[in-house]
Image 1: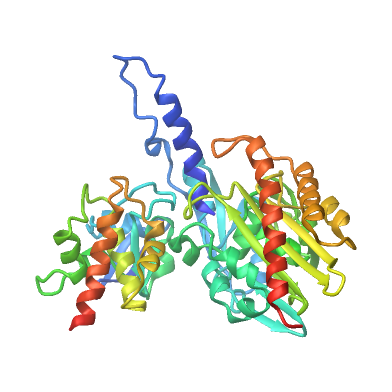
Image 2: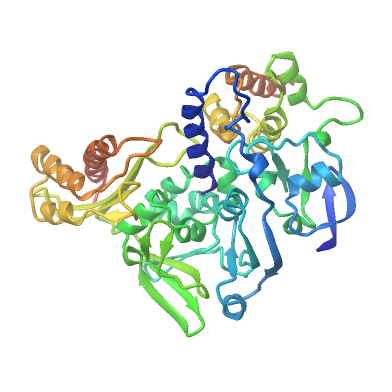
Length: 157
Length: 330
């Protein structure tokens, strides 16, 4: 059964006619064409599909679209502003924290949620925050470095 | 919660892959996603009261399911490809996610998330080991989505919240067509994935007493990794002692992942009660808990290892409680 759903994604309002049992992940990728959000395990284990819902990291593969109407959804596409990459995106690129890149959108969004809550987290806290995002290239060291480098910069300025 | 399901299949598939013959074209056994069907239901109800939920569940006679966070249900529907007529979403019922304390009792709403539990000031103050257990469930994302009720009603033997609730002798408040009933948590679970709930009932609330001021409680979880894994063994212990004699006044031991349901190690408790708490008695109680556990072997660990770890973890948990008691001024 199709229905019109109203979504607020990356600062824009959308009205979408879609199947009501679709997950947020499916709607983002298939209906809105926002393929930056990745489908990994599709079971809530890997964290590749992480998006921010009202600023908190959520698994879009286990979230029903109908449940998030009226909530603020942020995907990786919503981070860059006016053609400028978000500091986290820049840091990931500069520090080589990207290997195959599949976990990166989820990693960056989870990191953003952490830094919004606590701009100067300890290394331990960073590791704990990204514990739900699996990187199968296992490049965790550089990912943690990249996130910590953003916290350093903001403390200098 | 959702975290457990795929890992079994993946690890088994990896083991099998080693035996593949050369030259044979086979589909990658690790990815089963081509077999998964979409979660399917005809109707989705967002109910506003427990009564409404019960009414819909009764009308549809077992062809509907309750959904809260969906971390287990959606994952399972996807893996097993089963559909239902209706899903009844209880997360919109006002107050069902509240955590409050009144008259020495703590009432935990069924749709409180693990994140709510781990950050609750009530629990951190009056039942810390439950907040501790909640902060070790799944992953940060799962903790934002899953629920207390889901963790219990899914009835995984490894449910992280069960052992700490068992040592508090929690009661489950269940709403059904004939009104409400209360069931002690240790008779709530009837087998792996099975509870005393009938298809038209919902779990509304978990009620626990506050931790006695002269007691201490702790929760320990052993996994293969620190996040995103089910417990190989989990242990919760509640202890109170006579400070002069160092004799055990009250002991409760809850075990997870080592029997068809989360259990209390009652023989070990009976052994320790009234006894002086020294190395020997603690070790003997731990051995008794080992004998009471009935772990299985699976891809995570062998039954022998699990049983061995029951002994280690029970001993460790009792010692930790003792340390906490000694640091307390009562």
